[in-house]
Image 1 (cartoon, rainbow, N blue to C red):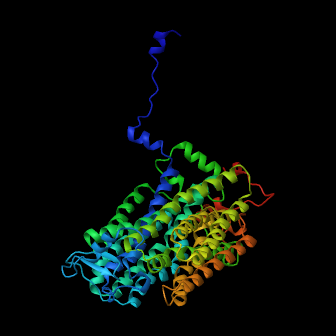
Image 2 (cartoon, rainbow, N blue to C red; image 1 turned 30 degrees about the vertical axis):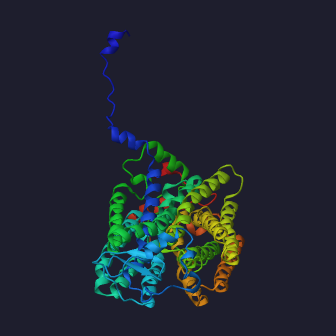
Image 3 (cartoon, helix red, strand yellow; image 1 turned 45 degrees about the vertical axis):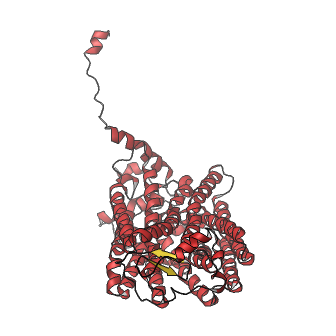
Length: 541
């Protein structure tokens, strides 16, 4: 056949792919999911923590004109800044409505139209804690809802509801503090759905060798905590406290748009995933995980599983020491080190910004250890759980003993918060290991256990610290945190495992009969093949 004959042959038609689609195809769908997870938790924690800072500007402090506590009364105790800067803050006039001085040290600038509420410390404590009451209660609800409605709906609507409540808080504050408590309770309930929802999607999308790295996306909450305090301080100083909630609520709403457009429950539902990536996921994700939505949750087996209890109890210890830094840390820095509010916000938030990078590193190392078979998966999880609890447990005790050695204490503070994130390559990732089909419900149960530490730790601290400038009382607080963190890890060391549990696999519904064709088809892909039992797919055709 010569050239002329060849020229008459019809040329094959290649599908035209736009430039934008070609670029999108180069971005793995798993990477998009990672970013959505990371940014979702970041936004969630910004909306969760904004009120902790905003309350300072919302409430008229009856002691605002006092000179402060004994060892903080002198301007010379301000760690950074000059005497002139401090004097400038103190000399700002109060009668023009442009600023308020809190304890003679902390300055927040507010506009003339800003309203101050006469809420006592009890009301403020209830507003803060109301979030966590409902947060704990909604964990199991999130696990069950995700099984039936999927991560896209549950995570998306929970974020939308949280953002809507943030936008309504300024108006609610004008009505009554009870309205604010109600909105915070709703936010807590909605936010409690997010963790079980996101855990549930991991088993469908992420192969085992990538799970530790993907779990670092959950550390977006660290960035959220780290950004909240300086962001709120800037907004309050320039625009007033109301704009804090309008800003965080708007950010949440915008995020929901991207989530709706880009998130999908399974790779098979994704309209833009490439054939190569879909094949890679299907080859590396177990058949028992696929089509897992809607399976019956074996709650009794979960409630009596020692590996699940081990995860819940050890993470209780991690949450306890973590919240020692999150909730008690700012007060400790203010009352013991006498930092002003801007210094306090920066130093309280900075460790959490750094902890995200450490979480990525820990998760990457965990994947390498497993990929190179240096350690078994169970030992990898136990190693990183130990790093996340024993190291911070020891360091938090040293913080109490070092007292006023500011530089040394801050270094240990940073290191401790950094190592806490190793848990996301340890016990937190272990949830998907032992029950990839039921990661949402298992997390819901474990989270119900360990998140009780989020309100117990502040209560215990409040009981132990009657004088916030008494170093001995703070040493007791740090000592309790150390004991709780280390002792709960021992439970995980004994009972923890990465083996998939038998109850992870669905069983045939006893109510399903052979005449119910739709039910049989719905359950058929999820039947576990027992050892020695074979099925010939060709016989069904």
